Image (cartoon, rainbow, N blue to C red; front, side, top):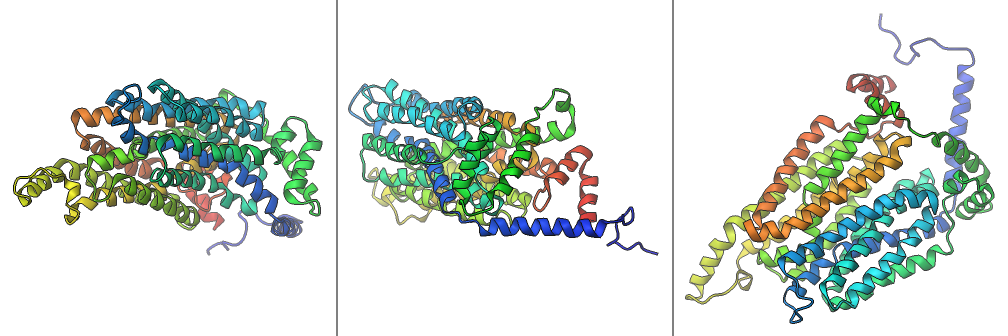
Amino acid sequence: MEPNIHEPLLGREPGEDYQAVGQQDARQLEKDYYRALRNGRLLLAAFAAVLGNFSFGFALVYTSPVIPILEDTPLPALRLTDHTASWFGSVFTLGVAAGGLGTMYLNDRLGRKLSIMFSAIPSVLGYLFMGSAQEVWMLLAGRLLTGFAGGVTSAAIPVYISEISHPGIRGALGSCPQIMAVLGALVLYALGLVLPWRWLAVAGEVPVLLMLSLLCFMPDSPRFLISKGKEDEALSALGWLRGQDTNYWWEYEQIKDSVKEQSKPITWAELKDPYIYKPVAITLLMRFLQQLSGVTPILVYLQVIFKSTAVILAPQYDAVIVGAVRLASVIVAASSMDRAGRKILLYISAFIMLVSNLTLGFYIHYVPLHLHNASVTAVNGSHESLASHPANGLTVLPLIATMFFIIGYAMGWGPITWLLMGEVLPLKARGVVSGLCVLVSWLTAFVLTKVFLLVSRSFGLEVPFFFFSTICLVNLIFTKRLVPETKGRSLERIESYFRTGRKSFLESFRRHQ
C-alpha cells in the first residue's frame, strides 16, 4: 500500500495544526504589511543611489568615442599610439578593482550611504583631469580615478539598495543598478554624436553632483545603523523609508534579529565545508569566465572595432544602436529572470555569444579582403573603402553580430552571475567573497582590455574574437557541470545541495513538492 504523500514522514505531532495556522496567519500579516507600504521615499532613495551606477556606465565606455579622435589629433602631447590607447582603455578596470576592494573597508567604516557619497570625490577629480588634459598622463589619471569611483559604487550601491528595500520591491530595485549603468553608457554614446571629447568629461560631472546632492537628504541603511549600535537613528531611518503611519516597528524587530544572527564571523574551519568552498569556487569562476567572454573590451573599444570592420554605418551611430539594444535587453532580462530557470538562460546566453563571436571572427578574417577586391573591380581600379559601398549587405554583419552578442550577454552571463552570488553564497561569507569577485572580475577585464588592441594590431582583429568564442564554449560546459538551478529553491535547500550533493537536493525538492 502506497503511503499518503500528503502525510508527514514522522507522523503528526500534537498541536501541529495550530502551529500551521499560526504560521499562515503570520505570513499573511507580513504580506499585508508589505503590500500596504507606500514606496515613494524608498524609490527616491534608490534613484539617488543608482545615479552612481549611471556614472559608472558613462565612465566605462568614455574611451569608445574618444580613442578614434585622439589617435588622429594634431596635438602630439595628446596623440594616442597603440600602446597608450591600450592603457587609456584598460587602466579604468584597475581603478574599479581597487575601488571594489576598498569598499569592503568603507562599507563597514563609513556606512553604505557615505561610501557612495565618497565616490563623488575621485569621480569629479577624474573627469576634471580628462576634461582639461594637456598630456596623455592626465587622461590616464582621470581614467584611474573614475574607475576607482566606479568600483566603490558597484560594490556599495547593491548593498545599500538591498538593505533599504523590503521583499515586496527588492527584486525590482535589485535590477536598477545594472539598468542605470547601461543607460549611462547609452547616454555617453549619444552625446558622443554632438559633443567634443572634452565636453563629454564635463557632462560626466552632472550625474555625480546630482547623486551627491540627493543623497544628502537620504537616510543610511537601517541594518548598518543597527550593526553600529545606533538604534534610534535606525528606527528613524526605517520610519522615513516606510512612512510614520505604518507598523514599521515590526519590521525593525525583524531586522534587529537578522543583524544579530548575521554578525557571527566565518571561521577557518568552516572554509573546509562543501557549503562554503563549493559556492565560493562557482561564483569566482563565473566572474572570471564572464569577463573572458569579451564583454568589457568590446564595450570599451566599440567604435574602434566598428571602424576596423568597415561597418555599413558610421561607427558612432553603430555604437548608439548597440547601446540602445543593450538597454532593451537588460530590461527584458530583468523582467523574465524569475520566470525562466537560471541554467536555461545561461545556456542560451553562452550559445548566442558563441555564435556572435564566431561570426565577427570569420567576417574579419575572410570577408573584408574579398569585398575590398570586389569593390576595387567595381570602380575600375580606384581605391575605395568597404564602407563606401553601403549597398553591399555583408557590411551590416559586424553590427548585427555585436548586437546579438550584447543581447546574449544581457540575457544570462551578465546579470545571473551577480544574482547567483547572492543566492548560493552563505551570508557570513558574502562580504569577503563579493570583494574577491570584484578583484577577479576587474583584474581579468584589465588584462583583456590592455592586450586587446595590441593583439589585434599584431595578429589581426579576428584573434580576440576566436578566443572569446572558445571561452563561450567553456561557459556552456561549466553551466552543465557545475551551476545548480536555483529558481524556486529556498536558500536552505540551496545550502543543502552544497552540503550533501545533487541527489539529496533533488529528493528534498520532490518531497517538498
